[in-house]
Length: 354
Image 1 (cartoon, rainbow, N blue to C red):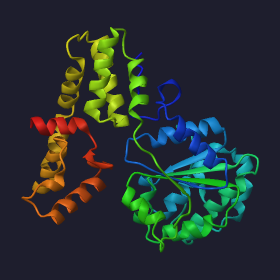
Image 2 (cartoon, one colour):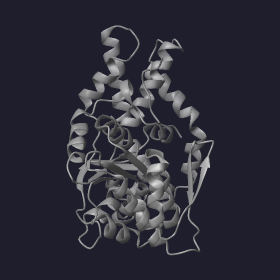
Image 3 (tube, rainbow, N blue to C red):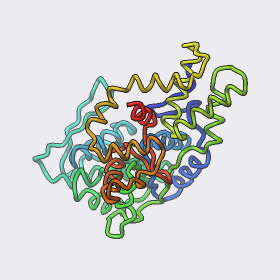
């Protein structure tokens, strides 16, 4: 089987070495502190936290705020996750104290509980408060619950008062660990570093960086098909050079190269072959994205595709370029890891060939 896995939570032998980060997260969650984990999308936050939870062996729930529609839905999702972890018989008597009793039904497809609140009955804040307080009640001192909120930068877009509501409840709670993950660094900084924010310094901050070059090199090289050592080294170097060591795209390209060698029997320059194939497969998507970008955004993307500094362009006002970069960062096309770079190197290859 292809030894490179990407696009989903990566576990067991597919997990790429992050020994130091894993130890740091486990240490934080062994304390009474909360964790704020920040990195660009597709850097492996979810896989890393999932690995830590697996090794800690404590109960946990995870909610993606990108999928939360409103406060009522947030409360419903919390309860749904609680029922996934704890037996209904253990929890049902605690629902009697809810000011707005949720509607529960068994879903035979998911084999879990469907939960919903009637929006017209009671205040959404009461539904959320009761659901969050339930987390503390089901947790125990010996087996503390870990609550993971993914894409937490979306908290203010769900409801302008949601962050304040959450902080008011969470600051009173004991016997819980919260993990706040986010992919928009500037927005996460607004939430956790701005003094006027309800979540100012609420947890220990950790910025997840790229996997060290040497670690990723060793991970890829030993998983490539059998071939002369010099050829393996060249292929591994070419993969990491093209992706600039981006975790997701490195695994994607390594997987494509493995398929090209092992199944496609490509002997001459399998990395170039795999890159070309990946670009061709996504060309329609790239064309659509490019068509929706304005002229300045395209200039920034083109400069980054050439691995140049887009702010060096003197034909465009610096303020306009900066606004474009900020917009592209928020949209996820550009990431900042010391310097600005394209999030998707295959998109960059398409731009250079367009």
